[in-house]
Figure 1: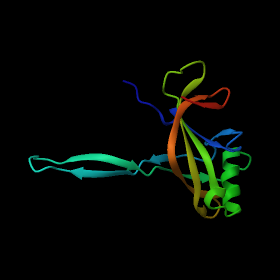
Figure 2 (figure 1 turned 60 degrees about the vertical axis):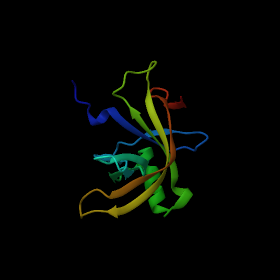
Figure 3 (figure 1 turned 180 degrees about the vertical axis):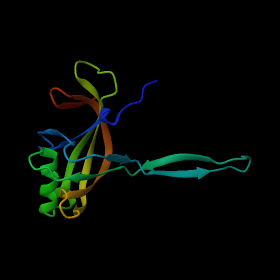
Figure 4 (figure 1 turned 90 degrees about the vertical axis):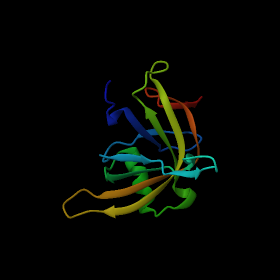
Length: 160
């Protein structure tokens, strides 16, 4: 068995438009990123059961990270522009690709990927003196994800 390192799950933010996506790697200034699934569940037992059954009824997915401000990085610049412009609601919507680089490529440089519509929520801006400017970010996932393949070399996504 081999451990899968963090670098094998990569995240790309659409810094273009929905119709003409530009997939920019979220990396510069980000040292930790976590996707929380926040499962909603129900538990049920019937009169002849000795134990209850628990099952998942939904997910409220969010991806969170702190980001040092790095000027000139496309994903970083897009998020900072939203913060600086105080954009909210649909003005802060984008798309996120999560790519499984630990999988065997399907063809060439195509890897399994999940595309989500996300709302970029900026939680904080700042930090201590003489430290890099930091932005606290939550990506609120919306609707159903789209499963497909991401061509890393061609930076294109196709649903399956």
